[in-house]
Length: 416
Length: 154
Image (cartoon, rainbow over all chains, first blue to last red):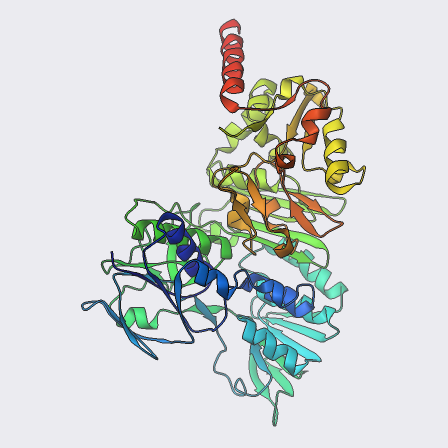
């Protein structure tokens, strides 16, 4: 093998590069990336905006780390075209040959094409450059559009920094993909208690202003603001891959098999740009979460090196700190299980709330507020698809439980 | 062969000395919640299970970490953390099946057992031999024999 080219310098790209280096100290690795920055944690960007995490601390690698690992950095370059027949890549600055290609092109935040969305004062929170731009802008009155985890985290971060924050969500409740109605309402209440105005079931139609953003018009009212943060979803960066003949799935991500192979020989893909399967349902899913991207990067790298490694599927795990309350969602929500329905086991006392979703005797998801103990046990049992019957059997028998002590912290959640 | 922290729950009485020893050694505070070892208590059975980091080969905490601070030390096989990078988000805690990630509120970081660099304090203080620091093979054999006997006699 002459070289491996990785496109992307995010979680998946770096995880792939690290894995290749661990297994092969010599093979040339070339990394092409748009940003001219070493790897940083995109998950911590809202924390940086709030001032809890310094900008320096965002960075996971230093430029020297790439040099030490012998990764050839081609940063500040845009991928223009992939010629799969000739095995050639054309970037904005050069043309290079590749032997194996790993696409980790990620995703980008979407700003819908509504009037005024191009005015100064419209931002997204996806990269360090976005954070820098927001800080330079010094927002006072902020409209956050979208209430996924980024939307909620950014709303909290800016409120803590002293901004007047309004959050608008198109759906009837916040965090619609991550939490069910009950926990979402509780989180919404916490946000409201801290002065964030949450408007659900409302659509932003236009942004108005002269030189910069001055107000936003929704289908129900006008909101005065000097800053609009778009956290209303992402789009997979797949255009060049698609143009090269790589198959795109129904959900908009690059289609890969369980070995992270695309339909083109020796071209792999991993991270936000792909469509993988959900470990629990087996259905195609866009995982869009840091841990899944890392795992996919590893799998792509190992298969690229000729090993035979199977990716089991993506599992979602989201941990949020909502004004000091730990909110956790793992697995799937009740909405996503709605076609066949699920049983809900709920608990609520002294500031702790949880709900466990069970379908066909298997744990499919769990959401909790104010709980930190026992979640890992549920995660383990869920990922290993242990039937509820078996869990309850172990927890009822002291000699079995003694030998399988990791079931014990799950007891309070699974007992009926 | 690396030595491991071996837990024998049958011998544990739940006295909690291991937690105090750990907390004092690692944080200087006499506070069990700061210990990297926890005793899981099932009072109805009189069952006490000390739980701590099992130093997984492919640790779920490392996959979950948003700041990539958790890794495997190649020499010792331990799961180690670059604590200056930790932002205390607690994702590792939600991913660990063994309740082995301990949130240290004094430093706002999450930590796990590091075998005290090869001389675990908890082992020294356990009065009943429920915690041992030794090579695995020997202990596993003993455990297997005991379980086999139990099944034959049952």
